Image (cartoon, rainbow, N blue to C red):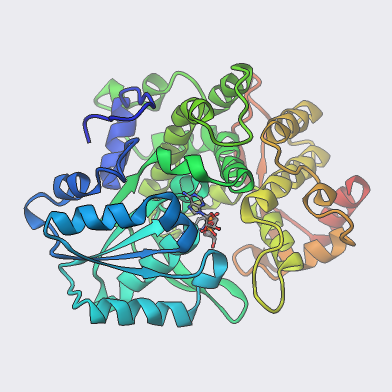
Length: 423
Ligand SMILES: NC(=O)c1ccc[n+]([C@@H]2O[C@H](COP(=O)([O-])OP(=O)(O)OC[C@H]3O[C@@H](n4cnc5c(N)ncnc54)[C@H](O)[C@@H]3O)[C@@H](O)[C@H]2O)c1
């Protein structure tokens, strides 16, 4: 979309970011949701969909003026119906998958029509999985409305549901046919949901140099404008530091904090797009880099999850924040990074009011490193031969920027010994 009618400046995207976004059919535009019919028409050009099934949940639907959006689509001649699911993880169940199939069938949806997700990561995950399986795959449009979903869940094609208490156990890779990101949707986010998204952006900053190195290894840059060295003179870590130095209050969404955020949001999405371009189905290994802090985060979530409802007691982003700190502390104990890197990360997370210790994330919980490491040992992706694979930061580069990480296999005992004194 070329213009924005809204009070949020969007600098022109550099050529590299434009190329990465185009590969994902991703549009980032303030006001995109209010101009949804125009965006749909531009995106699908000749093959405009006749029927649209929107999957959403009450809070996202309300906050994003879903009814007006539905009316605008209907006015353009798109027969639009809506299926509202519960908020949060409660949507990612077989029961609600069935609800979507039923709504799609009732609406007469065919493979040439489209299913559109309007919501956070829970909605984009379940709607994407429904789209991937309904009639062996119908068109899927993703409009993420939380920061975490905009920088992470909506890019990369992972879709799925939880199953018998196991997170994302049933799913597939089904990249959206179009991703529409409207940063203005973030203005209504509760502070904790906003802050959770920042944890993923900070993680991206902590692995940026390694992502760019992997991407550069796979590409030749005939056009210098597409070479990250030229296209991106500033690192994401520098951009985050500039946000903090601006003096803008970043802990909740406002037009000011959103304006500061936009370049970081854009870069974080472009970095995820790079990883996906190299390793689309997580078979080559580069995508593992995205797990920085996540092996501990998943252990924290498993340890504290409500056994009845399956709901997370500590939101994913907050668990990632503590997981990042644990990964950096573990790396420090192995001599991979200096104490100053751990302090830098701590200061960055704290500036976004993210928890940096287990007790900050959940006070009064009887935390035990041994118990968390046991959960890490059950992580099928990373546990092998009585060792656990972590992605850990490596020595910071000469210009003292956090940004490099690599895999490291450790025995459970070594992790317990390194982290117990710090807990
Ligand atoms: N597929 C992937 O690659 C991927 C990556 C990361 C996370 N995820 C998944 O994403 C899920 C978490 O996503 P999430 O953090 O977006 O949580 P979420 O979908 O539960 O949304 C968080 C809360 O924000 C509310 N909300 C959504 N949009 C809003 C808006 N614009 N204004 C006000 N409130 C709004 C929702 O009602 C909900 O209460 C997890 O299930 C996780 O597994 C998937």
